[in-house]
Image 1 (cartoon, rainbow, N blue to C red):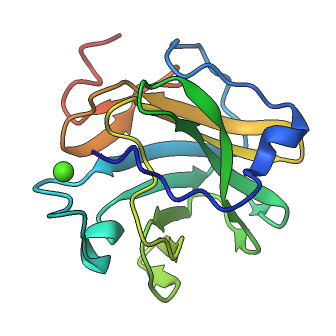
Image 2 (image 1 turned 90 degrees about the vertical axis):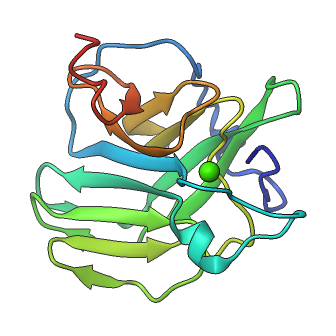
Length: 184
Ligand SMILES: [Ca+2]
């Protein structure tokens, strides 16, 4: 259960007025950045007696791809926050980027601590969190935005199964691997 997100004081993009519904599939137009995959619920037990490990936290991640060259300075990654009844309580800023991507390169954002760096075509980044951020019980929505403009946004449904999710083409939904072709 990952609903205990560690929100920093303030809570990110609330003030900008961005509002995003969590659970309605939408048609999307492809923009400069595209969320391709996520693993909000790593395989296996996430925690034991309220403790987890940094390796475990880093098995939780979200990945996006640059569809054209893009300076990411000023771009932010956000997700949603919920209370224990899965009512939305806000939007939290997870990461503010400072890098530049070339078309076709990927960024994988891990939840735990680590040293940023390239592995092949993917730049690995770290939120340096002490707890999971992507919600298992309620579902969640990842948004990449620049100031008030949404660059891309993708959600997954409540009670997300373990393992990797991939984007359903033409929509804003992330679904378990192997199911994306059944939904279109
Ligand atoms: Ca798990």
